[in-house]
Image (cartoon, rainbow, N blue to C red):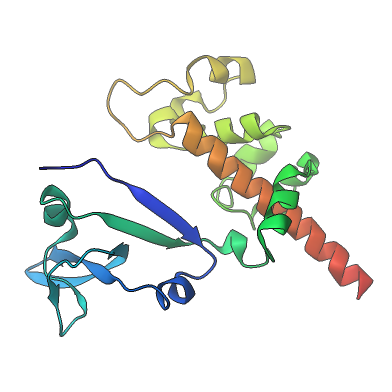
Length: 196
């Protein structure tokens, strides 16, 4: 029986987290060889290959067989976040949106660092506008680049008819909030440097 199970957990350092949790690394079967999956692990007692310390079943086959892979992703936006309270503060703080129009700032931010011209052109002033930029840099919505905010808002969250990759609104908003956290932490870090 195949389950539709997709869990991604963002970590400042996945190695630290996985060092304290009993798990079996997932595997990828490619070119006739098993190797460790970059991010996936199992918390179930899945058969494993002892010599390369990963599951004996390729992650795609394992999913079809009912094994549940969880992906632990390194996300450097959390590296300088001290604790949950600090994270909530960074999330709730209104960012200085104008900073996104500066290449030296935008080039340091998650997901938009290679799209500084586009970000500068649109100069987002809200989480939703930033989410729309994240959406239009995906292949399924790239045709909206150059349109007005109003035109983008009309169709940006509709699934493409050709099946091309796009961001659902929930994903885009989540990534936009991650950028807000990162931007606010960047500004906070600059303030800390001035004080010391």
